[in-house]
Image 1: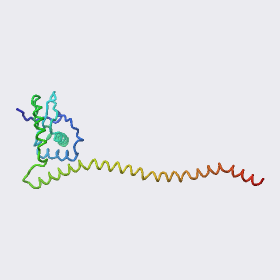
Image 2: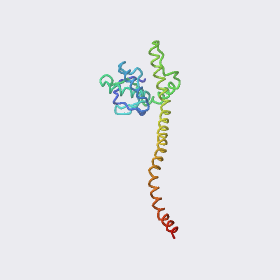
Image 3: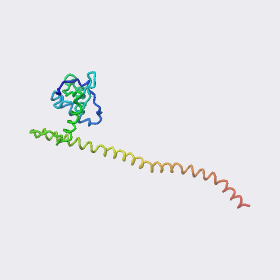
Image 4: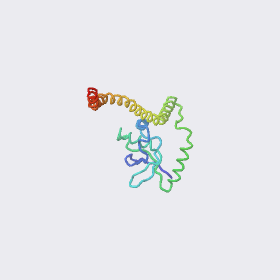
Amino acid sequence: MIKCYFVEVKNIISNLPKSSFQESEIEQLADLILAANGLIRPLILKDAGGEKYTVIEGDLEYHAAVRAKEKNLLQAEEVNAFIIPTNLQKSAIDQIALLVNNKPSNIPISTDINFSIDNLLLALSSTISLQIQPISDQLIDHKKTLDILEKRPTEVHLSIEQLLPVLSSTISQQLQPIVDQIAEHKKS
Protein backbone atom coordinates (compact mmCIF):
# COMPACT_ATOMS: atom_id res chain seq x y z
CA MET A 1 0.00 0.00 0.00
CA ILE A 2 1.20 3.47 -0.85
CA LYS A 3 1.29 5.80 2.15
CA CYS A 4 1.27 9.56 2.42
CA TYR A 5 4.08 11.23 4.38
CA PHE A 6 5.27 14.68 5.27
CA VAL A 7 8.58 15.32 3.52
CA GLU A 8 10.93 18.24 4.01
CA VAL A 9 11.01 20.37 0.85
CA LYS A 10 14.81 20.56 1.03
CA ASN A 11 15.01 16.76 0.56
CA ILE A 12 13.11 16.78 -2.74
CA ILE A 13 14.63 17.03 -6.22
CA SER A 14 12.77 17.78 -9.44
CA ASN A 15 14.16 16.80 -12.83
CA LEU A 16 11.95 19.42 -14.47
CA PRO A 17 13.52 22.89 -14.11
CA LYS A 18 11.62 25.81 -12.61
CA SER A 19 11.93 27.61 -15.94
CA SER A 20 9.47 25.08 -17.40
CA PHE A 21 6.68 26.97 -15.64
CA GLN A 22 5.39 30.53 -15.64
CA GLU A 23 6.83 32.52 -12.72
CA SER A 24 3.41 34.02 -12.03
CA GLU A 25 1.90 30.54 -11.80
CA ILE A 26 4.55 29.45 -9.28
CA GLU A 27 4.03 32.62 -7.23
CA GLN A 28 0.26 32.25 -7.18
CA LEU A 29 0.41 28.58 -6.21
CA ALA A 30 2.99 29.37 -3.49
CA ASP A 31 0.61 31.95 -2.02
CA LEU A 32 -2.25 29.44 -2.19
CA ILE A 33 -0.12 26.79 -0.45
CA LEU A 34 0.57 29.24 2.36
CA ALA A 35 -3.10 30.28 2.55
CA ALA A 36 -4.27 26.63 2.75
CA ASN A 37 -1.42 25.62 5.11
CA GLY A 38 -0.18 23.04 2.64
CA LEU A 39 -0.69 21.29 -0.66
CA ILE A 40 -4.14 19.87 -1.28
CA ARG A 41 -2.73 17.47 -3.90
CA PRO A 42 0.27 15.56 -2.52
CA LEU A 43 3.44 15.21 -4.55
CA ILE A 44 4.23 11.77 -5.91
CA LEU A 45 7.85 10.92 -5.17
CA LYS A 46 10.30 8.07 -5.53
CA ASP A 47 13.03 7.35 -3.03
CA ALA A 48 16.42 8.57 -4.30
CA GLY A 49 18.28 7.22 -1.26
CA GLY A 50 19.71 9.00 1.77
CA GLU A 51 16.37 10.61 2.70
CA LYS A 52 16.27 12.28 -0.71
CA TYR A 53 13.31 12.00 -3.06
CA THR A 54 12.71 12.69 -6.76
CA VAL A 55 9.42 14.05 -8.11
CA ILE A 56 7.51 11.63 -10.29
CA GLU A 57 4.42 13.85 -10.55
CA GLY A 58 3.84 17.36 -9.23
CA ASP A 59 6.82 19.36 -10.46
CA LEU A 60 4.84 22.61 -10.51
CA GLU A 61 3.62 21.96 -6.98
CA TYR A 62 7.21 21.21 -5.90
CA HIS A 63 8.56 24.49 -7.32
CA ALA A 64 5.64 26.36 -5.74
CA ALA A 65 6.37 24.64 -2.40
CA VAL A 66 10.01 25.73 -2.64
CA ARG A 67 8.83 29.31 -3.25
CA ALA A 68 6.33 29.07 -0.37
CA LYS A 69 9.20 27.92 1.87
CA GLU A 70 11.25 30.94 0.77
CA LYS A 71 8.33 33.16 1.75
CA ASN A 72 7.60 31.44 5.10
CA LEU A 73 10.17 28.91 6.28
CA LEU A 74 8.22 27.60 9.27
CA GLN A 75 4.85 27.25 7.58
CA ALA A 76 6.10 25.59 4.39
CA GLU A 77 9.00 23.48 5.57
CA GLU A 78 7.26 20.19 4.70
CA VAL A 79 4.83 18.99 2.04
CA ASN A 80 2.58 15.99 1.96
CA ALA A 81 3.68 13.37 -0.54
CA PHE A 82 3.13 9.82 -1.64
CA ILE A 83 6.43 7.97 -1.67
CA ILE A 84 6.19 5.19 -4.22
CA PRO A 85 8.18 2.05 -3.34
CA THR A 86 10.55 0.84 -6.06
CA ASN A 87 8.49 -2.27 -6.80
CA LEU A 88 5.35 -0.15 -7.45
CA GLN A 89 6.92 2.69 -9.47
CA LYS A 90 6.07 1.31 -12.93
CA SER A 91 2.40 0.77 -12.12
CA ALA A 92 2.23 4.16 -10.37
CA ILE A 93 3.77 5.92 -13.38
CA ASP A 94 1.39 4.08 -15.73
CA GLN A 95 -1.54 5.12 -13.52
CA ILE A 96 -0.40 8.75 -13.54
CA ALA A 97 -0.04 8.71 -17.33
CA LEU A 98 -3.53 7.33 -17.74
CA LEU A 99 -5.04 9.85 -15.34
CA VAL A 100 -3.23 12.82 -16.90
CA ASN A 101 -4.22 11.79 -20.44
CA ASN A 102 -7.88 11.31 -19.48
CA LYS A 103 -8.22 14.44 -17.42
CA PRO A 104 -11.25 16.35 -18.78
CA SER A 105 -10.02 19.76 -17.66
CA ASN A 106 -7.44 21.52 -15.54
CA ILE A 107 -10.20 23.64 -14.07
CA PRO A 108 -11.70 22.24 -10.87
CA ILE A 109 -15.48 22.16 -10.54
CA SER A 110 -16.70 24.46 -7.81
CA THR A 111 -20.01 25.75 -6.61
CA ASP A 112 -18.35 29.08 -5.82
CA ILE A 113 -18.70 31.05 -9.08
CA ASN A 114 -15.88 33.47 -8.19
CA PHE A 115 -13.52 30.58 -7.47
CA SER A 116 -14.42 28.97 -10.80
CA ILE A 117 -13.98 32.23 -12.72
CA ASP A 118 -10.63 32.86 -11.04
CA ASN A 119 -9.45 29.36 -11.95
CA LEU A 120 -10.76 29.75 -15.48
CA LEU A 121 -8.93 33.06 -15.86
CA LEU A 122 -5.74 31.53 -14.44
CA ALA A 123 -5.97 28.54 -16.80
CA LEU A 124 -6.71 30.77 -19.80
CA SER A 125 -3.95 33.19 -18.88
CA SER A 126 -1.40 30.37 -18.52
CA THR A 127 -2.45 28.74 -21.78
CA ILE A 128 -2.41 32.02 -23.69
CA SER A 129 0.95 33.01 -22.20
CA LEU A 130 2.51 29.73 -23.24
CA GLN A 131 1.22 30.14 -26.79
CA ILE A 132 2.08 33.82 -27.10
CA GLN A 133 5.62 33.64 -25.70
CA PRO A 134 7.23 32.04 -28.79
CA ILE A 135 5.41 34.52 -31.04
CA SER A 136 6.55 37.40 -28.84
CA ASP A 137 10.14 36.14 -28.96
CA GLN A 138 9.99 35.98 -32.76
CA LEU A 139 8.58 39.50 -32.96
CA ILE A 140 11.39 40.80 -30.75
CA ASP A 141 13.94 39.10 -33.05
CA HIS A 142 12.25 40.61 -36.12
CA LYS A 143 12.19 44.05 -34.47
CA LYS A 144 15.93 43.81 -33.78
CA THR A 145 16.54 42.87 -37.41
CA LEU A 146 14.39 45.76 -38.64
CA ASP A 147 16.19 48.17 -36.33
CA ILE A 148 19.51 47.05 -37.79
CA LEU A 149 18.22 47.36 -41.35
CA GLU A 150 16.74 50.80 -40.67
CA LYS A 151 20.08 52.01 -39.29
CA ARG A 152 22.09 50.71 -42.22
CA PRO A 153 20.76 53.15 -44.85
CA THR A 154 21.45 55.99 -42.44
CA GLU A 155 24.92 54.63 -41.73
CA VAL A 156 25.59 54.18 -45.45
CA HIS A 157 24.26 57.68 -46.18
CA LEU A 158 26.46 59.16 -43.44
CA SER A 159 29.44 57.17 -44.66
CA ILE A 160 28.96 58.39 -48.22
CA GLU A 161 28.59 61.99 -47.05
CA GLN A 162 31.79 61.60 -45.04
CA LEU A 163 33.63 59.95 -47.93
CA LEU A 164 32.62 62.46 -50.64
CA PRO A 165 34.94 65.27 -49.51
CA VAL A 166 37.82 62.82 -49.09
CA LEU A 167 37.17 61.29 -52.53
CA SER A 168 36.79 64.72 -54.07
CA SER A 169 40.09 65.87 -52.58
CA THR A 170 41.87 62.68 -53.66
CA ILE A 171 40.51 62.92 -57.20
CA SER A 172 41.49 66.59 -57.39
CA GLN A 173 45.01 65.78 -56.22
CA GLN A 174 45.36 62.98 -58.78
CA LEU A 175 43.85 65.01 -61.61
CA GLN A 176 45.85 68.18 -60.94
CA PRO A 177 49.07 66.96 -62.66
CA ILE A 178 46.99 65.92 -65.68
CA VAL A 179 45.24 69.31 -65.76
CA ASP A 180 48.63 71.01 -65.46
CA GLN A 181 50.02 68.92 -68.37
CA ILE A 182 47.02 69.75 -70.55
CA ALA A 183 47.40 73.46 -69.73
CA GLU A 184 51.09 73.35 -70.67
CA HIS A 185 50.33 71.37 -73.79
CA LYS A 186 47.84 74.08 -74.86
CA LYS A 187 50.43 76.77 -74.33
CA SER A 188 52.89 75.00 -76.57
